[in-house]
Image (cartoon, rainbow, N blue to C red; front, side, top):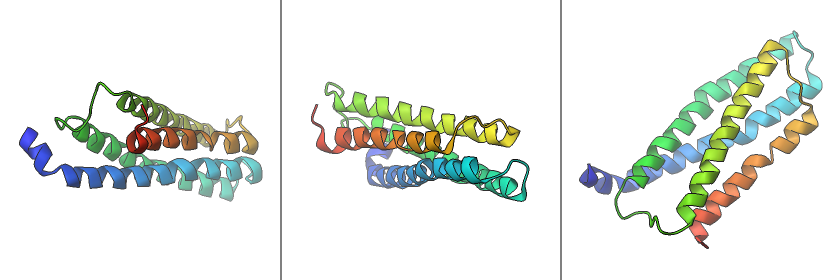
Length: 150
């Protein structure tokens, strides 16, 4: 297995980066859909159904597969011996931010179900504020992996 991971490492890394880009696109777009859905759409209208369809497809067809790919490719890189210095702090800060991003992803999924049931309780302003959360996680991940200050 180790030889496979070494031989395919660059392609695993490509898969990881591709998955991260797709995941982040959805992570940033879905809450924006929620903003407009909460502010301008009447529950039960045709537009409500349209927004629910867009939100469901974004989550299920793009975000879920992208998150799964990011995790699989990321774990393959983690299991490649000699790639990560586990005595450093950066892998642990990245791992914490990735776990937080995964929690946020699932939180968005629960908010989508609130809209589906007609039980959304958050305002457009609250969704705008929550839309900033993944930016913080992304910054922690990028600084941890690229700058490695710790």
